[in-house]
Image (cartoon, rainbow, N blue to C red):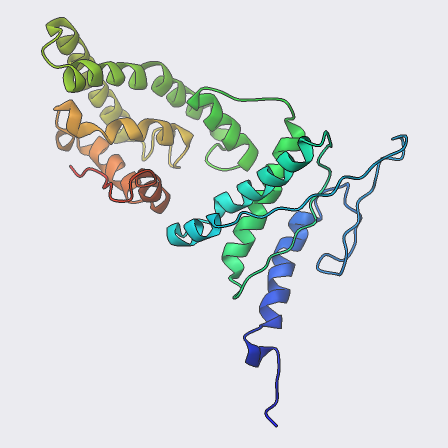
Length: 281
């Protein structure tokens, strides 16, 4: 009789244990979770004993066919977001307060990297929701600052004075002025000679100022890629509309092309249109 084992059935116990060990430290950071052995047969939560006649409301949900889209895009970060959002929504409509998640991963074949990404994002989002209950953030610059602060990425504390200056330069000058250039020069040519000339000159001046900055700095706020670059780059990605000639600005071109090669930027640019290509020089 042929010997049957987990491995012969396509199940890797070693990979499963490795996956649990990678997410264990993250989950145990939640102080309200009882310090049980993560990966066991149950989960525990320390309930506030000051609540009179407590009623625990349980709910479970999944992301459905969105996982197919995630697989096609090879982007599993949004799965964690959807998972948290759907579970939270189900509880809120029953006038309950989300306290903890008791979740599991069902998969035909475990991919440790994709699984970990899903759990990490879900945990971060649930933590942010609890910390910022009933708060919202608007304006792209403020949203980038918020996300940078919460994620601890692309917004280093030691560099924030410089990052904020270049982020505000985009919010107050680069975006509004180039946006006006788009309106007069690209979308409505011939309707206002004054508008076309004014914003063409301003946009050309901004090209020069950015080029000068990038002559002395790899990125706008220093040696590292930051939210200031994230905010500014999309305006340069419309350089074909400007008719100024990005290739004539050596440092700005170098910065533009380097960011254009980033994997996340390529994915983001084609998110709404899979056939979209980042303009070349």
